[in-house]
Image (cartoon, rainbow, N blue to C red; front, side, top):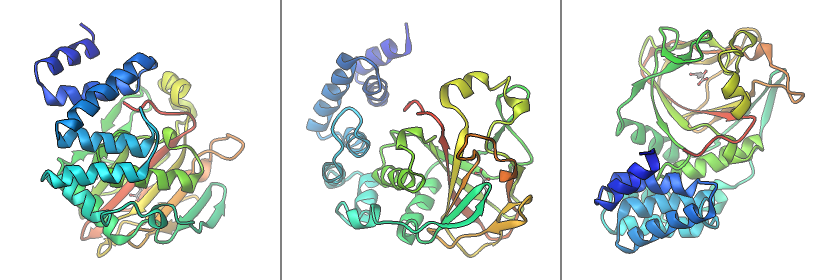
Length: 312
Ligand SMILES: O=C(O)CCC(=O)C(=O)O
């Protein structure tokens, strides 16, 4: 039995987790009939006051997946889930200020350029501190996993001493409107459609933890192992880092070839292009998260691909 057939069966037996996953698979299907089926299943669960369904619907409304994009609808769906007593929804609703604040999420941003090759920019107050706090709280409610790096020879993600932070991911259809709106703001900053984004990662560095100098792009010697990935997704064209807290020492993001580093205030963003505008690898994009020497560092990390990334 294929995965979707199995999810259908489990859903028919009342498995709510399977239903959420089934909706995600069907809503991203190439088949119109399956996308319509997804929305029928989801809307009927929303009508039954199912908070999980309402939060997933809110994420789809924000992304414009399976339905028309509408941010006011998205907030209304979160409000309904919050009124039902769902804790995650209450948290999202509170942090959103109970409304869709277009001024906050889509306000113009000032990119300050620091380097030409690679193109490196910073944005002050990219998101406000209370949204940063939301991300940190979100991560704290999840089980932080050891971060991984790509093994150049096999192309497989492995745990490495060179990347000692832990982290938690949130996929493209994460039922969290704050994450969805932040992704759209990131898309605005890099001027690349949100569909090109890899999942959001929230990284946590304890004292002594670091991310040693590395490239986010796939290097020539890794191309063979990553051939299929390159064909489907292209390179990691850009990296966006949003600093989520302060009060720690060390932990600067540092570019050794440029002898330049940045450590943002909570809500500041660092944007750098691993690929040049002409589509060449940026050799000087080598960068590191220097060891944290005191306190803890929380960071939102987003990689933006040259091609759209499957939603699930
Ligand atoms: O922690 C940092 O400042 C750097 C993170 C990083 O290099 C990455 O996520 O690619």
